[in-house]
Amino acid sequence: MYFALVTGASGGLGSEIGLALLKNDVTVFGVYNNTTIRSKLIEYNNFIPIKADISKKPDITSLVQEILTKTNCLDYLINAAGITHDGLLIKYSESDWDRVISINLSACFYIIREALPLLRQSSHGHIINISSISGIIGRAGQTAYSASKAGLIGMSLSMAREFAEFGIRVNVITPGYMQTSMGNLNQEAMKEAQKNSLINTLSKPEEAAEMILNILNMNNITGQIFNLDSRII
Picture 1 (cartoon, rainbow, N blue to C red):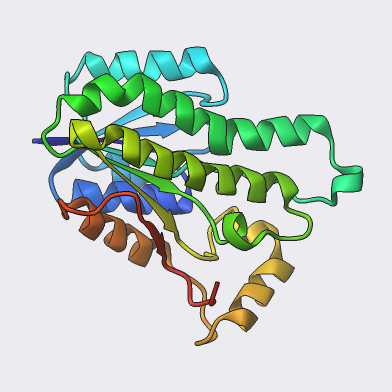
Picture 2 (cartoon, rainbow, N blue to C red; picture 1 turned 30 degrees about the vertical axis):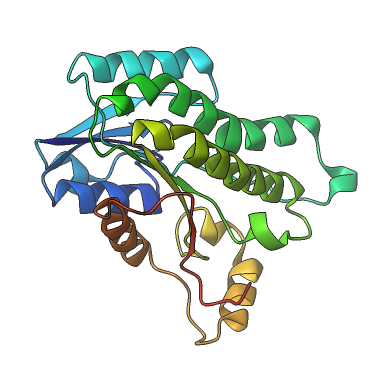
């Protein structure tokens, strides 16, 4: 029996990752906050929803403690939760900056730190952090989002070096622009992403989830950034 922790489990990508794992008999602890968990997830007996605000450290500690009531081992940790508040820097509020950095970057750090003892109990622990092409090339109007996703890449590569001695792999996925609830917030950006695609397409959460599942099943890959986009970086 394998165990996975997936943040952002109520989102478009997070829920697809959860489904892919559930279909492969992995017990999934799905973390969500404001939005409703999809019924397709709840149908599985091996899905355990955990409500938590990951911008708050006490909530992170509590969710890991809740996992400990079910198991003392964690095999997979997928940080899929993320938000964006777009806006030009000259008008950008400190509260929006703090919120984006808190959820997209700081929460990943605290969750990984809290879950590390559980991951060390696994013989094939694997962390996958969801970044973005914006964290590599930057985007006007996305200073906070780009900074958070760039920071996530740097943090992941450092952790890959640190955790190798424990047999824990750490990799990064940049899934591309998807028609999820977050992606749909900016129709102009979506159109631009499709225009810049070499094959005039957007990414699909289902395909990203399948790729993540394939990477989790590989034992010799760590410290890598997998770009699933059809735009050239």
